[in-house]
Amino acid sequence: MINVTLKQFRYFEALARHGHFGRAADTCAISQPALSMQIKELEETLGAPLFERSARQVRLTGFGEDFALRVRDILRGVEELEDLVRMPGRQMAGRLRIGVIPTIAPYLLPNILGRLTKTHPELDIHVRETTTPRLVQELLDGQIDTAIVALPIAEPSFTVAPLFAEDFVLVRPAKDASEPIPHIDDLQTMRLLLLEEGHCMRDQALSYCNMQTARAREGLDGSSLSTLVQLVGAGIGVTLIPEMALSVETRSAPVCVNRFGGTQPSRTIGMIWRKTNPLAQQLEQIAEEVKAAAPTNTI
Image 1 (cartoon, one colour):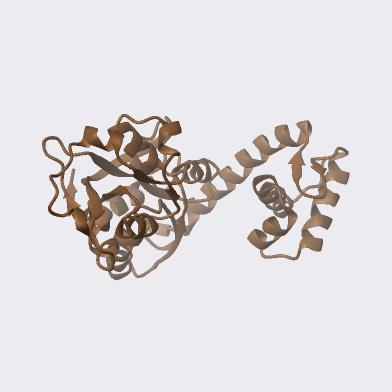
Image 2 (cartoon, one colour):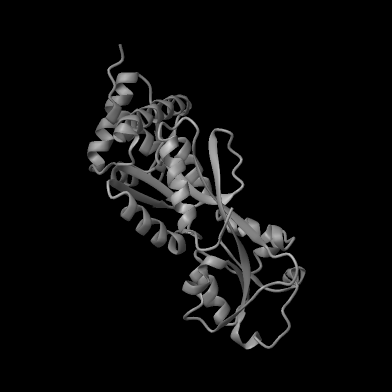
């Protein structure tokens, strides 16, 4: 019988995910030498190398890739066992790990967290803010319980609960306030500022404007909506932002805000979780709480 530990599985998964001993050690809250020793012991127990080590990067070997798939299944099963016991009596209590994308988190979380901590004081809420692809993977791996993202999400193993819809608005420099409001098709000829690659809102904006990624790169990419709005205020271009971000992002920038004529570009926000999650019933209740805290039109 192979003598490996669950702790070693967690250390291995962290190193496989980060590809860096230092970052993996930080994630696991242990020292880098301790992590290295545990990984070395795991490899000796298995009788095969799991990682290819170089001065700059750590990569999985072929065996390591196969091993990683099985380890993730094991860890996911362990997480679901923990889910099963941490809310006794089907009451909402204990740890709840929520993922949120950056174009939602600053504007919706204050309302959501305020409501949840008031109605369910027994919950220990942990928030993870990152891009949609990472949240989807972390949800699949059992690292978070649920995520609030822009729909659609094409993952058959998830339950999807639509929450609300909101429009996108056009942000222009304040000096353009007296100019006619452009049609959405006109954005193809304007310098449209977008979030950097990896953000779903970038893809949505390109789709709305019928623009190709190569053309969009002629402009500037930002890491946050705040950066984009400030660039617009400096006269560098125009951008689209979701309605929920208006009061926060435009209050300190010399910009004007306009709605397009006709059909408005919009997005649907939803909450997703694994269908196999034992907390599914509780997560449905959480989704209703989130919907009640939504600042725009619920579905």
